[in-house]
Image 1: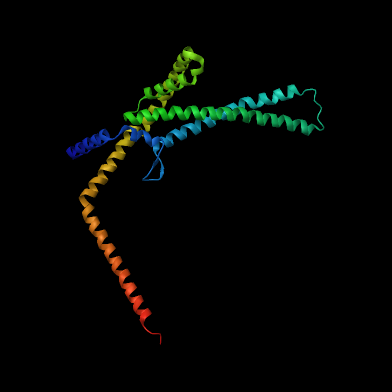
Image 2 (image 1 turned 90 degrees about the horizontal axis):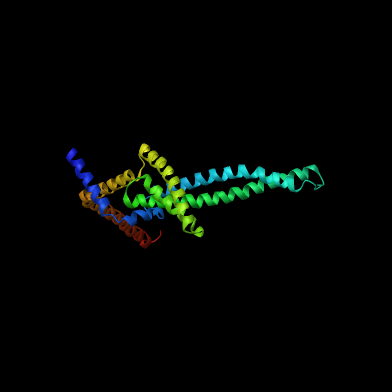
Length: 241
């Protein structure tokens, strides 16, 4: 049994080694033709982006909305409104729109940043078929340096250091979670390759038999259709009494 298992593992390793790495990377931007849904890597990136951007946007709203209302009240201290309700309503509008403006801004910034960060990290992992915190650290370094291009070399260096640091922190947490739950990229690709190999082996062993059965069933259906057409034509040819 162990020899058979070893043969299967060797065949899986060869299957993954012969794959084009860029075909695996394209999983981040394509839909799985077998399920008509996104690949798991793309789902992970979207989930992380949605969660992070919603969290940061909510925090930004809760912190900036009271400040916006306070600034409105301070700027309109000597303004006389027609009714007390109108003054309270305008202060509430300042609270809501000020918070939404800042919250929406940080939501979009976080969504764009986290999407780029997670996509690049997952692309490296798919290319190498390896889960590592250093992939996330490298992604954070690239993203941090790119975001500080307008500040010159010193700004890029500082952004790379900060991005790499936080990228490593997040990377260690994410990889530890993936290894603990068993959903890392190695296991996903290993299971997919195993299913593909077993399916190909089944078709090689039983494909001819299945094809003959399908041909036989198709021939019976064609014969039934032919007989039905002949009988219907005879009925049409008979005179109506």
